[in-house]
Image (cartoon, rainbow, N blue to C red):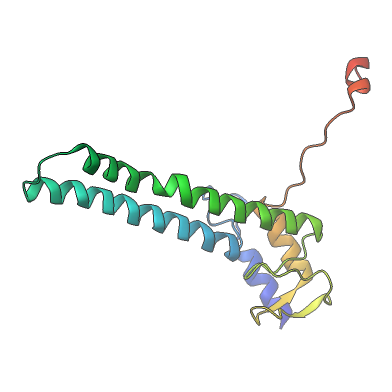
Length: 156
């Protein structure tokens, strides 16, 4: 049963994929889709305000122009920081738990057995496949090592 799950997880991640969204685990992909959909909604609202204003003959006022600009900037001022904060939290969790995080819901599987069912989402997992998905996605790459100042000046 778990062998087929391993094939399903790894088959969805081609080694030479140029689509970064396709390489994301489902929990990360879901957040990216919410951000993109939210951005499209707010941009559509801003465009709708402009089109409606021109069609209905409403004269251009400063506050209406500022309102349109504010609605257009909401995704970058509100949604992007929320998405970034969530992404950093999941990356930190993946690194601290040695890649033992459910790829579907983000639950920490570090205290559970190597094979089983995630208590959060109820999906079966195989720890080796979960680790492989996180490592291949590139989301849990360890932070770069900072060289010691003394060794840097000595040239070693």
